[in-house]
Image (cartoon, rainbow, N blue to C red):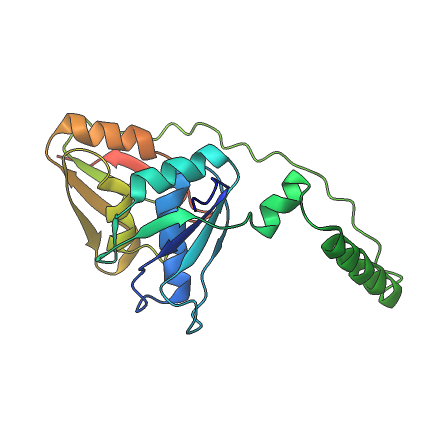
Length: 218
C-alpha cells in the first residue's frame, strides 16, 4: 500500500554513530535547501536508532527533498526516504486535523498553569517580521575557490560538503584549523563557483548564522 504524500518524511538507514545534535544540524543543513523545515525528530533509543523525521511547512518541499535525496550518501550510508505514515502533530495543528482530544488536553494544561500562576498573564507578543536585508558582501574578482565566513561553531566538513556537492564542478571543502567560522570551497571553474556562491549566499546553517560567501583572493 502506497503511503500518501504528506509534509513529514521518514528517513532510515542513517549512520547511528553520529551524535544526535550533530545529526539534527546536518539534516537541517541538507533538507532546508528544499524549503522551510518546521522540525526534525531524531531519537537515539534502540527502536529509533538510524531513523529520523523531517517536517516541512510545504508539501512540495517534502516531495522535492524525497526525490532529490533518495539514496544520498549521508555520513557514508545511502539514505532511504519515504513519506511518514501520518502527518506530524505540528502540521496536523496547522491543517486543523489535530484531534479534539489533544486540544482539550492542551486547554486543560494551560488552565492549570494559569491557575497555578495567576500573576503570570500571557505576554503580548509583538510579531516583528524578520527581514534579512540583502547584504552586499564586498567581493574579489571571480575565482574557482570560494571563501566562506560567519559559519557557526558546529560547522564541519561533512555539512559543507553536503551543501556544496549538489553543484556541478564541486571539488572539496577545506576547513581552517583553529578557526571554526571560516572555510574554503573549491570548484573546477570560476563559473561553477559563481553558481554555488549565488545560490547559497546568506544560507543559514543554524537559525542565527547567515553564511557569507565571497571569491577567495587570488
